[in-house]
Amino acid sequence: MVKYATEARRRRADKGVDGAGPGPPGGALKGSRVPLQAAAHGDTEEFMTSQKDPGAEPAEAADTAESTTEAAAEPEGEAAAAPEAAGAEAEMKAALAAAEDRYVRLYAEFENYKKRTGRENEDFRKYANEKVLREMLPVLDNLERAITHVREAPEEGTGRLLEGVELIRKQFADVLGRFDVTPIPALGTPFDPSVHQAVSQAESADAKAGTVIEELQRGFFYKERVLRPAMVVVARGASGEGN
Image 1 (cartoon, rainbow, N blue to C red):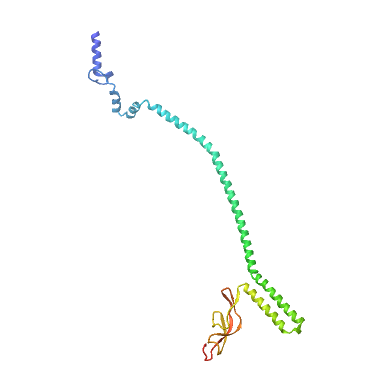
Image 2 (cartoon, rainbow, N blue to C red):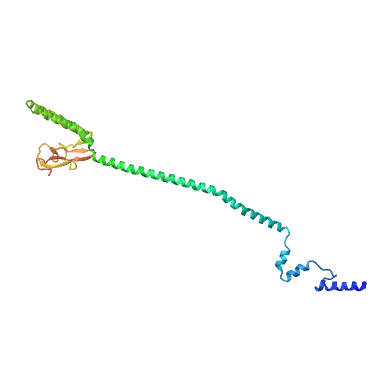
C-alpha cells in the first residue's frame, strides 16, 4: 500500500498540479510561472496591479490628505481676504470723492477767474485814456484862468494874454512828453515822405530843393510810431528843381 501511494504521488507530480499540465523537470512547481501565465492570457492590468509596490499606497494616501487639507484651507483664505478687499474698495471710493470735490472747486475758481479778468479787460479798454485826460485837466484849468483874467482886466492888453497862452502851450507839451508824444522835426530838414506831408512847393533862394521851408501843422511821434505827419511846404529852388 505504501508503495502504491508513493507511485501515485509521483505520477501526479509528473502531470502537474490538478491537471494543469506537465510541470517542470523534477516535479517542482516554479512560483514565477503563475504571473507569466496570467500575463500571457491578456490579464496585463490585473498583473500590473498585483505587482505594485506596497509602499506606494501610503504615499498616495498622504497626497490625498494634503489635497483635502488645501481644499479646506482655500475657503478660510478667501474669508480672510474679503475684509481687505472691502477696505481697499472703500479707500478707492474716498479718493474718488476727494478728486471730484477738488475738480468742482478748481472749475468754480477758474470760472470766477475768467469773469474777473473779463471785467478787468473791459474796464481797461473803457478807461484806457483816463491817465492822459487827468494830466490834461490842469492845462484846461490854466487856459480858463487866462481867459478869465483877460475878461476882468482888458486894459492890460494882449501882452499878458499872450504870455499866459504861451505858458499853457508849454505845459500842454510837457504833458504830451510824459506820454512819449514828441514833435516831429520839420523846418529846415530834408523832406521825408514817411513823416512829412507836403502841401505845396515854393521857390527859395536860401534853401536847397527838397528842404522844408515852412511848417503849417506840427506832426508828432508816439514812441517810434508816427502819430500825425507834419504838414509842410517844400522848397523848389530858384531854378525849378525839386519837382
